[in-house]
Amino acid sequence: MIKIQRLSTMTFRLTSPKGRIIVVDPWLTQDPIWPIAERSQDKLAQVEIIVVTHAHFDHSSGIEEIVKANGNALIICQFELAMILMGKGIKNVLP
Image 1 (cartoon, rainbow, N blue to C red):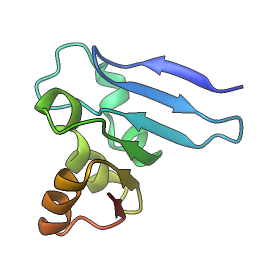
Image 2 (image 1 turned 135 degrees about the vertical axis):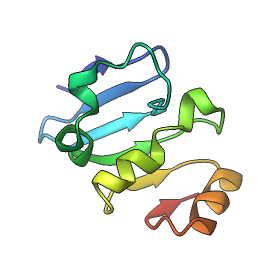
Image 3 (image 1 turned 60 degrees about the horizontal axis):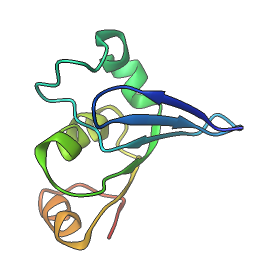
Image 4 (image 1 turned 90 degrees about the horizontal axis):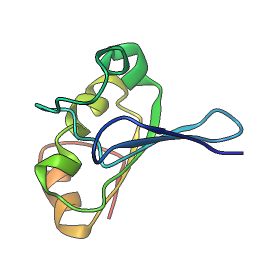
């Protein structure tokens, strides 16, 4: 069974039965709701997959923070955002 945790207005963390962590629409920057305890480097480093529905700030501003904590995280997003991220040197981006 997949565990779903709402972290913010837009952000959800999914935990697979095997413990893999997926974050959908990571809005970290200036998000008043995302719990402080969930923003730690240890928690962000656990994220293995980031899924971004679109590039609005309230859906994508946490990508770089998560990648900083876990450089191996896979990012799945729309083509244009993928090109921007890859242009910044972010790896493991899947358009």
